[in-house]
Image 1 (cartoon, rainbow, N blue to C red):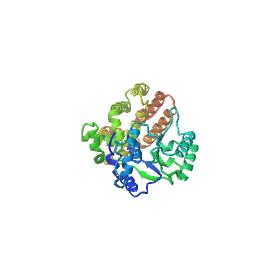
Image 2 (image 1 turned 180 degrees about the horizontal axis):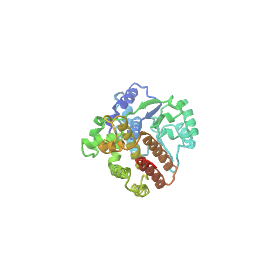
Image 3 (image 1 turned 90 degrees about the vertical axis):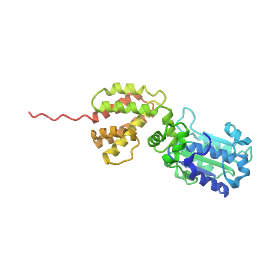
Image 4 (image 1 turned 60 degrees about the vertical axis):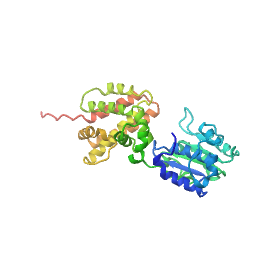
Length: 343
């Protein structure tokens, strides 16, 4: 993905102005939703800071040239003055040993003399010991080193770390900002771009992923199944078995995400039928009909059940049984009790 993303203009102005004025922060915290392009921004910034041509022409700010030796090394993933720290394979958090090793690396002299850049993503995945180790580095910054933290849950980071970073916030993009980019990336038309932006809550990279991995087909199958169950037809256990086999890569988490999204839309329709902004806008009529048949309290209980189900999946519990449970709760939410007959 080449070129700066069009919805990042405000964030680039902050960074470019700081570089031109010689007051760039030694640590940045890029905070915003998943799919907004924080890692793209961080990678472009790292290449910009390590670019020989940009360093020679710092007064103009601008992008990395992409042609100098350091740019070519960066693009090949072989720049010795750049490090990426993430969650190691088969681990759930960034460990203290990773951060300690990073601290030792930062004390070494940069090989190309332009400083060093480190990206930590997701920063909120550091365990307590790792965060404490990083804090020591932030409290005694090394000259020429830029540390870039990425997080979509910045509140999970210790306040002591947040306070030592310049916060750059990434808000949801608008369809106007991201629409032309999505069309250039292969989205069919403006209407599809608008729908994808709505479904992704304004996160264009997530919108593009929805387009490319057949998520919409998965969503439609889920809601057809849920409508059938709501009408008292079909069997929740059999439906769970069928749905659990649809996504071979993401398990049932994508299904639970779509379920949660639709439940939130139904709650909005219950609260303000004439309103509102809903994410699944192409399903409006179908969701409105479902909203008429389910009490608010049941919806709230279902939301909680879906949230807990997602947590259970992440703990590697049986996904089909988890899905069975939420589908049974969904179907029972639409059962109208029969009136008692008088004796």
